[in-house]
Image 1: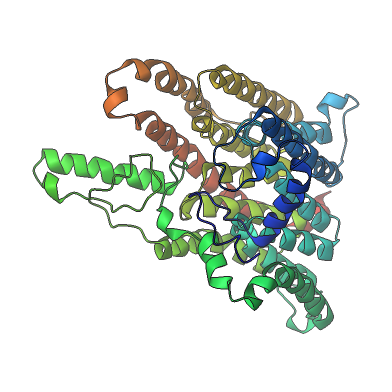
Image 2: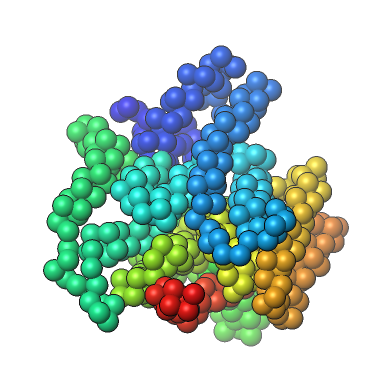
Length: 476
């Protein structure tokens, strides 16, 4: 226990919350029967056949929780006039969109991680709120935070929703909050559940005086603004704008070359760097931008609760806002928005259109994670299958309401095809591959950033222009 957060054998030494360490510890008791050498901490980059088999099997086994969570989410789908054909039922489409999600498949089963297990906890928590089992939902989310703290991105949505719709039990006739309806009992029980989970997780480290070391591992700000593989967010566009201005500045003799910062943001390295022309971005700046980007959504569900679907929409916006403006965001974090959005996509044509754009661009941005030649046809085929199914199945669900995406959106998504051809087939044959190897990744991140930003804006428009839950019920 004292040493697990002090090990420095690798730059990727465990930087997850304590519950994930216990999860790994449990796996180690099974792993020793496959190959004991994989448990040697200093045995870096060890990949025996037995180790690979164990890793694959452990991911598949823990995915059982994800499958169960999907089953529970299917119960949350509105069932109005369902067609007789199973393939045309929203619950079937949702099951395929979640269970066969391209991004989750390549992240867990090719790139290898345990995201399916963690997303299982998230979806199960969401399902419990749809089922009015709020204390269970809060417990699951508290556990999730202590398995992987990246889900702090969506904590504001959870906190405000539970306080507004669970702890406060009544509204005024105009829909505003009735302050006297605060249930002290519910508030205390909710707080006890959440605090107990954190106490069990972090308590031993606090008792031993290791909390600062734990926090330094959980929030490694020295890794820099962007991940080695740029996430397609606002900072990718910001970096490119800065790089473009610096090149123009040198050519127009506005900037002296020797005065430019030495650390390059296009070096593909995890490091801190200074921008050349635009103001350099600090963790505090990203925090302010992130809070500003999600604040309207959080205020919306406080002032105008829209039931569990309003809560889910706020979760998605918080996830996407944090992805857009967060510090050192990993590109796989886009799945935190894509997977929950799948639930709304099978119920609303507008959300279905946003899902198609976000899922396609978000999944395409994961391509750089699989960079070897044998993986190229695999990732292209898998994404093509998922994208075609998403578009055709959702079009089928809402064929009476019109097209999911307009001509401009179709043109943008079609642009991914020549982009992939250029990055994977054309560019490697040029002499620039040796001097500017980061260009394909830069182009991918910037192009996908446009689609992610567009989806973020459309989600906000959807949140503020859709009718209240009570109005829908009156019409029905």
